[in-house]
Length: 517
Image (cartoon, rainbow, N blue to C red; front, side, top):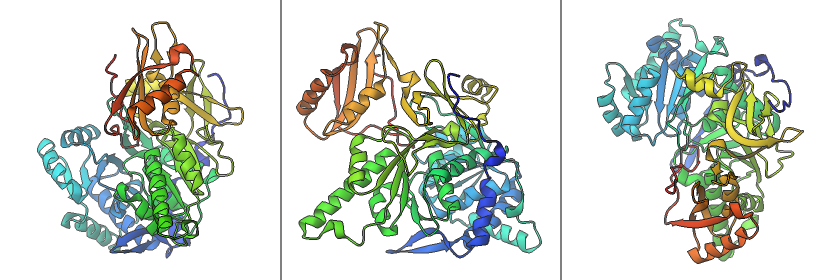
């Protein structure tokens, strides 16, 4: 390791999520935990009800499937999804969250690989489950739909067990090293792998975020990221244990409406959603202004204080738009393998252009060849059933090689410069980080998305672009940009798209092999 910025906190310094959830029940049983839409209004679900539901479901699932088993969750963001997830944590059952965009064959592969005993799914995914059942018969796996009669039976079983003297699992201690979840990576090119996360790993992000982000009891937020992604579930638990009431945003296309309806104070988003929110807010304010209303004096505007983005770099245009709306914009950096973000921009000192401050709960370093390294309570146990893959990225003394290049300032701020496996190596021996060029091109007026790749033999660098302005204008801007770059970094070939790039669940552009390679 080239540098170490501090000694990682011992496991005991990170408090488990479970006692924190219990404390919320004890200290604020009637305060809202969730907000559910009912018609044009929302209903509050207090902590007392949430934890009562978790108590019943956890004991029923323990009785049915046994401690140490695995259960898959397939569904959009919902209160029921969170009850199931929290119940698994208390029951000692590993949660296997599944991306709702997967097709039945991919679902079948993951549930077979993880050895799950049950799949709990939403009504929107019923057709996929029917097909999945043909691939993985119900004799080996039980399938339970949210809101179904079988789901009702689970709750009734748990409540009967508790009433007849069964021990509540809410008070049961769990080994922080136990496996709490197997989360499949949403990699941009590689075959997804199951990241095995312990209860300690799952507790690391809430502990880190509590040190740098304001989130107070009585605030409101949204589950605006998919809960099957590690960033979504980790940020949700942080907000819950801080006493922030959570609205449900199951349809991300209605993010703007949900932010205003629930009058949220803070948000965790991927850059693509942050950009949508900024654009819609500006459009609505312009519409109000055209009708003669003073948009800046609108009392109905949500009291939004900050937005933190992760999963991909935030375009400068989006940052400036949100700042213009009076929202503090923060960024973070992390991986599924680090149980969400391990660096976060502090609210008091965000330092735009960096990926935030490395968590004091971990050690960070830069290897001799420029790779960011991390060791600490958020680092995964390993890749599930893949010891060889684990050994390639995780050393025996706990250092995780992130696969990203970057730097760390003397006071701990992280800057990410690119992915090691995306570096363009030209026949001249020169190396080009495509992320650097993507950042420059994305900042040009009218450019919405871009991916840069290169051809080693011809030394030609190509930018594939999705823009809202004519191609000729983009070509002129890139020609000007090229004059400020070394010759070997200049973009020589442009490919224009008529639609946005496909994205992963974490909001990253899904990469494909460059056509020139």
